[in-house]
Image 1 (cartoon, rainbow, N blue to C red):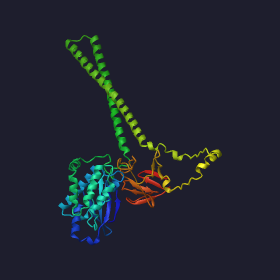
Image 2 (cartoon, one colour):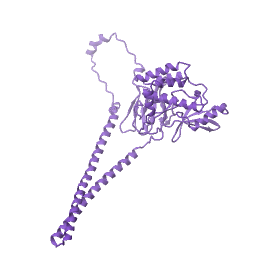
Image 3 (cartoon, rainbow, N blue to C red):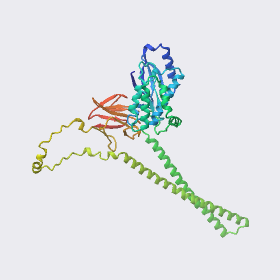
Image 4 (cartoon, rainbow, N blue to C red):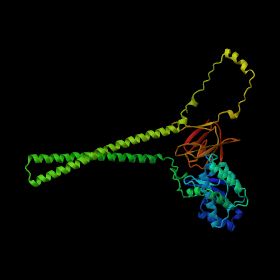
Length: 454
């Protein structure tokens, strides 16, 4: 089965061609209608399109990534494995309700997708699939991406592989048997609410410039503080006005003869004005103190943010080191040479190999502080989703799982993992999920961050 990746403004698709000789097959037509309706849960939504008299299936994988890429850095944990198997069981039960067989399920870790926002898994159903990968092979693929440090996950996957070798057992029976041993964990995961992340959609919500929203919230908070300060000053002004009223009444009482009713009225007005003025004075001082406290909190938050940013770049503190010229010093002398000649006369010359040479490094060119990404240890996954990638780049133009750098017999290759803003090599945008080989001197651009490979 051949497929390619296509992305428009808001959506990302996996595109597969349709077999021409199966157009009049009633079973295939029924399966296509069910798939387009989206009534089967846990299957990737798809739609049928005809372009230049050729038929294609467009699978909507927006905000998704296949599990082979998702768990290449950190393997499947026990909870994630149970969720995957329970979602698969639910999908197969839904297929049986619509009288659709499991022969169209694409059992491959590269075609099983996980939603990065909810953690739920979706499976690909291809009606034209001729040769289906066996469940045994799929279980072995899961064994490769499971977290081998998680003993519980390893036990489950080995149990799954053992049962997958039994040809008499069906897919659904194997899943039910595995999940029945972990019924408590399965129920907890199914009932658990979807996890809400800050970036809701990998393709739609990775705003390139979210700083604008932050600026608006900061402006609003300053306006609120200014309003509180102005209100405090007004309350203090009211205090002085009430004091002026009291002073005026005192002047009238001292210079004029008042009747009994006027005397009582003046005393009442003075009493009310005194209480109201005191309350206004206290409230004014409190309102004047709140902006100062809020300003102090903002300064503390800014200091903490600065410390966090500094921590993120701790490993780049020595970014100027590579620019400095290398100075070679030696304490070699004839005396030392003669004294040590006997020691090394019979020593063998060591041949330097490529494996002993230091790998290349990506150096950022358009950041205030140079970022270095060493390519000594490959494969390397890059993105901004901490815990899911090998190297975290906290930039809004970088997708949660952006790209992977691998090394094979032909050299070092960059693979874009369906990122929102794409990956570029020497100014050219590379295709998703395809190897693009890079070499020393190339310019690599991830999102809006440019790197030089040296």
